[in-house]
Amino acid sequence: MNDSGTRSCIGRTGKRIAGMVALLLLAACTESALFAVNSLARTDNFALVEDIAYGRHPMNRLDMYLPGQDQAPRATVVFFYGGCWGGCETKNKEHYVFVAQALTSHGYAVVIPDYRRYPEVKFDRIIDDARRAVEWLKANGTEYGADSDAIFLMGHSSGAHLGAMLTLNEDYLSPETYQSLKGFIGLAGPYDFLPFTEAYQKAVFGPEEKYPASQPVNFVQGTEPPLLLLYGNNDATVKPINIKSLSDKVRGAAGCVETRLYDDLDHIDLLAALALPLQGMEPVLPDIIEFIGYYAQPYASCKTVLTHG
View (cartoon, rainbow, N blue to C red):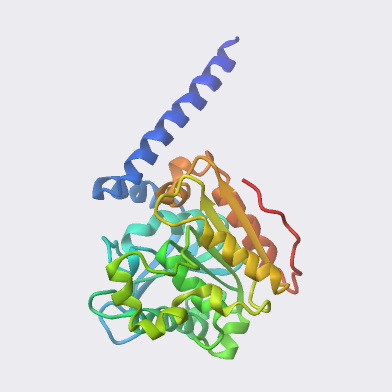
């Protein structure tokens, strides 16, 4: 092997080792790990407008990320982070700079809202905050330079549940805002998770007669915006039936859905794959960018895509 080939091999190996270390750190969700990946993300070329109020409560604040100079946003992604709706440890919007960087680097504006959580409130208030953030974007996004006519909802874990509910249940958003939804991207989302297995879930979604209204799968019409459902096959937090049940229901209603299954990823790895050290190691980000790029086009028709891992 010549010198250039040796350097190339060492470079690839070094990047993979660095990526694996970063993945292990991020998987632990430590403050230091998040600080590291977000510090790296902040070196990229995007503009940030912080703590914009979309409601009256102190948690009704959002951050908006815009692509670098001289880039007109191609579409706007609203990202809802997870955390068991507040039932387990939950970070705030400032911890997800790496998600914004992954998307702004491809020309998309990103909105990351904070929202009220259990035990302060139950699901009706949580989803109302999510709704308000999207309505705020539709009404005000263009003033900040975002595209408010091409909106994608995206979330991880319970955040994916929030995005799915807004996408599948048309009653939450105004007709004008709903018409601006171009798609939904769910990372390891719970969409069909009755019966509840955790006490906090019964409290968040109670009383019992309201349980069915908490399940996105119950609102499939076949006319909703296209869905991209991502799942790591090593996920021990969200069961795979959630992805299968929702995708089967959408296809059965002649709706538009794509699924992506990743053999080497678990619940946290799937999100961590969006961080800069890891973006080239798994196809998670390319799959998301391909989906957004296609459905952000005017009059894009539904693709027929088989599940793949």
